[in-house]
Length: 296
Length: 282
Image (cartoon, rainbow over all chains, first blue to last red; front, side, top):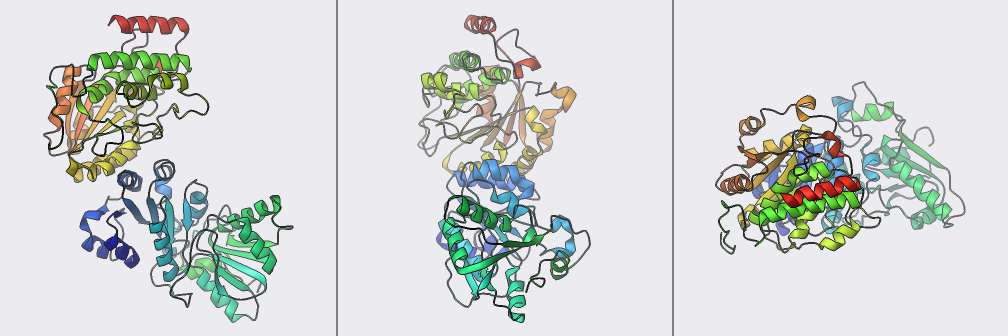
């Protein structure tokens, strides 16, 4: 949010719409730019439609809600109004994965990467920490066109010791050096991966991959040249998510002859199920098997 | 309005600012819609015929839309994108697209003239084809263009009002008092699997809008004088305006009027000739 406010000071195209959420989060933007802020009410389809109208008039619009409301509630508007028109609209959701665990499955955002990833012109990102989040905001401001910014919640710890990181589709951010096995992690669960790997005596390498879009054969080759096997991790269903994007990357690279073999890829993700019990994010992650403990 | 040409007297149905006679325009829209649907075996001729007068008055007398990229043009959002024949016909009559090209290429493989309107065609503000999208988009557009004297028009069908997304936009437009937004409902009483009264009866419709804090007027959607007057009066409203334009599906061709089948059917050669003859005689 503070990064968005900074940008908005220098770029009067930036608008922020909310679907009646963001209490104690969005006030700074609303106070400083009241004419560029709008609470559309609990009406997410309209939020995306209005954002498109603003974008068609040259604005750069961020829509905001939590869980699946920003995306799934307005999927057709996202597909047809935003993506088909290449509108400068960034969909922001807070509460990726089980971040709102105790609130139950209505608030578990665990299929949204898959759903958004296959829409043409849509770039999907789940930053793992505040630095990645700020950098992804920078990326989307620079970039012209649709995007999906899937945030966890506030207060995650920083995973990078640098001040500036270079983010974008197809870029892997090194977190832990290692060999033989490389863990590619998408989103805030990367923090848990750091802890698990460091607590073990394994030599797993770890990269944070905030973007779920745009993987190329170049990355496939780099991974094949550097590691023997791959593990993907996400706080999302197995079907169609980040892990699937990595599989697609390897398969396409193999089919095009860029790599001679597809390495073993183990996907750690939710086993295509809903969890109907209450629980914290930590509890639900364990319950869904989102851990490296079986293979470390 | 500073920097805008004067409108000629809109209370006479006839030549507005554009120099185009709205009655001639409506006849041209009907003729072209029939030809496009016949030649290219396309559906929705009934839907195109019902909206012809609304489009004619809007483009010939009310909205300033040329040239198509003129920044302060009035915006026209055509939400019932399936009546593409009528919309494309209207903008061809305004010189935004070439009529010959349209006739050649409507629905043809590789053509930009997709049979639900496409924003890739000059004069089309938004691609539509899925109902219930354009009103919210038009609202966003109207929010940031009103200060420049731009007026924003949206044309919906009555059946389309079944979609809840419209009502989200209707609520917000009233809340924000977006007075430069004018909505026209082409209320032809037939949707795609039955009469609106049998599927979802929207009546009393004008009262729904006024209860949602819009200014709403009911007009004969085939009377150019009534339409023109209502569009003009909308400019004085402090809240968004809805015109419930009572129309007949298939209007202008006696054997197509008020029939569900003409939502789908394409005319045969005989039907086409008979239809054209009727338009030419009226």
